[in-house]
Length: 602
Image (tube, rainbow, N blue to C red; front, top):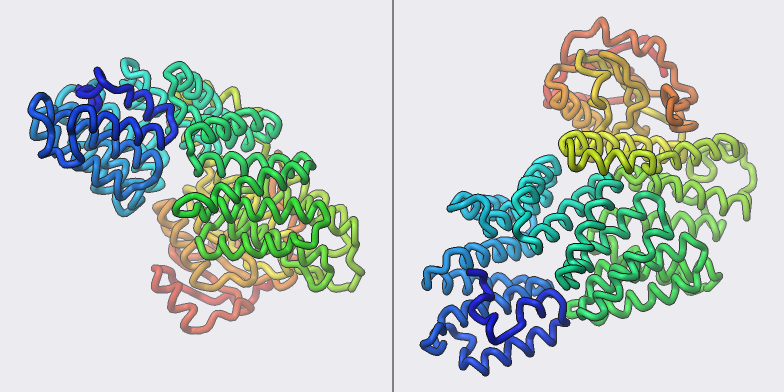
């Protein structure tokens, strides 16, 4: 028995939950309660099938609350339905309600609920036939929990296992395809994501599931944007907006309109962008409670559109968006707000623009294509209103002021990350060798993050900390690429040896932590020599096929020979680094032995 089966003969509620506005679904729930004489209290149900009818209506209210994001109410109604189905011995309906209640807790409590949700979902999947619907749904939601925990490889394995068992359940299959597509968008495997989401959208259309189709279309738009296909992104985003308008889904509609406004900006249609973003912000503000994330992103799009139109009110909208991003603690939003501030400073010519902070934040998020956009915008602003030459290479916030060729090269290198060529292979791998796809996507994300940081460093003030690091596992499988939370950047990777750099502002604790993470990844003690290059700069990231970044005032010949004479776990320091006793102690506490190198200079 499915949770809504007890009322299927008198109500189309199952269909309405997939395709009707929330107000229409609530009216139908009220109608059925009045028709059958069932109150909100299951104890008041009529004798003939009353408890199951009450349980089904409770499940329906919980499903609607979950769809609308009223997560406290969703948990309350769904847990009530679980108890009611359990009392009546309706095991399959009970377990499906348990799955939905676990999903509601995951969405409400995010990571805090993951461990308990996985435990409960595993118990559901383990009870009875692994091919039954509840077991497939439990596996699907377990994959969602693993994705929230950041374990993309585990999430992929779980979701693919659920997909293989979902053939008899078309609706569940479409939902699992949505989740897999979302996972691959997150991983940057946009070709695989697009193929899966197109399949999902078609299945949802065939079933009349407007809610599921809207989700698939939104992620299809994101996948197309990731592939650089701006025009191709338009149609699914417009479809999402239309579906969400019919459903009364403020979140989905505000999201779609904001994405469409960003598309219009990229295509040079600032007037269209302003209208779209204004609609998005109005919808987000009218929601109860207001959708502050989309208010912030829409406000940013409004500010950028007004700036492109020459409207003096642009600065206020951008400031509003920046304040909201900071209040919400959204890393991408904060990076974009920093970009907006740099643009405003450069256009006003009032003070040196801090392009580097924004570029570094975007690069650290793995968004090398965004760094390329920032570099392009910087060049366009400076070409329109060139800064005076001051003879100081740091006078504009970092990087040489007169070396136009170097800046063009940096932009070209950062813009080389379009994944179009890999798209067809991704589609093949997602069905044939998904583990290979996950590993490839993870390595590509790490490489793009490294490329983005290198591009950002072309904007930094002179001064680099350089480390030559030796360990036998280096030089294979991208192990030398620094992780997301590191501040290091890899500039060379050879068998047994890698070279990392940090901006001069990096603290000893940051450097020590980065090296400790690399040691844990390799499973072997490191031997490393660190020097300070006070005039060191990154001039250009590597192009595809290049052997490394183009550096200036960084001497590596003597440095890379030093690790060979060091003991495992030894860090040899250049006195110019200026680390005091506390700094050394903080790094030694991580398990390293620090020694001095009095001779070498960067």
